[in-house]
Length: 100
Image 1 (tube, rainbow, N blue to C red):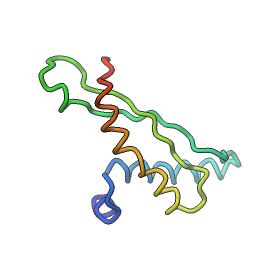
Image 2: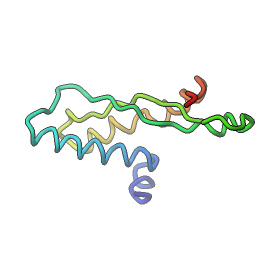
Image 3: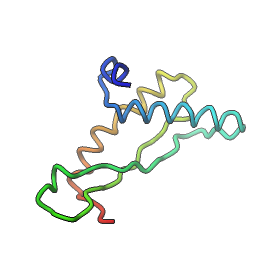
Image 4: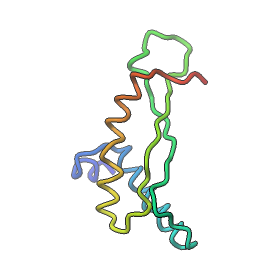
């Protein structure tokens, strides 16, 4: 995974999202349930560095990520799925954590 991350200039989390998107696409396609639009997943996001002074609180938030399962071309789906999560994670940190 790290080799793929380094080769594509993304993160390990982006690689995992790409793998999950491909697997989900194959599953949905096999059941003839492939949608025309991306699916949306809720992904947990650590916000611990921004809240290091808060003791005892869960330092977790969530972000919505589009999984482009409708893309037949894996490289196109990869590009679509890795464009935003890192940037969305940075913007999510400003909204603060969700306490559990």
